[in-house]
Amino acid sequence: TATTTADLVTAARAAGRGVAAFNVITLEHAEAITAAAEAAGLPVILQISENAVAFHHGRPAPVLAAAVALAGAAAVPVAVHLDHVQDEELLRSGIAAGVSSVMYDASTLPYEENVRSTARVAAWAHSQGVWVEAELGAVGGKDGAHAPGVRTDPAQAAAFTAATGVDALAVAVGSSHAMTLRTARLDHALIARLRAAVGVPLVLHGSSGVPDDELRQAVTAGMVKINIGTALNVAFTSAVRAYLAADPDVVDPRRYLRPARDAMTDTARHLLHVVSHAPSP
Ligand code: G3H
Ligand code: ZN
Image: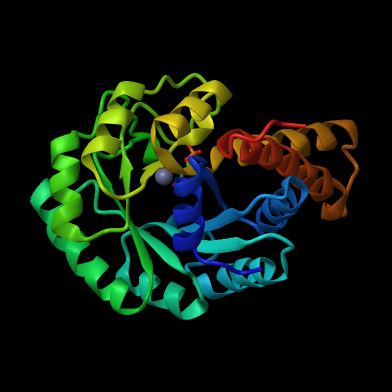
């Protein structure tokens, strides 16, 4: 069933659990994530980034419609979210297409400009009934620009949240986007300080590079929305590569997309259990 990110994040926080938000690039991603949530019996967030929309020729409607339709048909609650958006036109079309929440990313702007533009976008999104996530202290790793040393300051995070009125805050605590190996170490003391300082739920970006135990600890320390993208792409591409190596004459894409989708489902199901603090079967 379709639900809202607001409801999923509120319920997860109250239960001391995390809620996984997986990035959707292709239809197979959305199908795999939904199947994983159904198999795990856990809710999930399907998130589509501005970069993913750019891949789809800059047209958000088809990929959003697929995600919204899968959410509506799912046996578990599924929310649809826009991720890392800077283009305000995409915010408008996403809301029209049925997303319940957006991440507006002005994290690379100077602090005062981040506050100003985020406050303006949040006020408008709230007038549309949409939940808003913003980022302070760029997580890094996007476009290859790793910034592993960047950390969000708790006092600045509290001021930012109060000044912008956002519903959730993405913070830099040691993870980095697009890691294919799970070697990140998080600053758990900082997560606890951020949770104490900030009234809204915290969001972990770049979670693919974070080992299972670190993810569990991060949720215990106060991270609620756990964003995962690259881990599914590692599973997808590894499965395609293995299939093509074993059958170089294959033509029908379903032959290799099926194992690729299955591999994403397995990875997503495992990570859903990890972030929800449920034992993996
Ligand atoms: O917003 C998306 C996430 O931060 C995904 O990051 O691809 O490194 O898991 P990741
Ligand atoms: Zn991110």
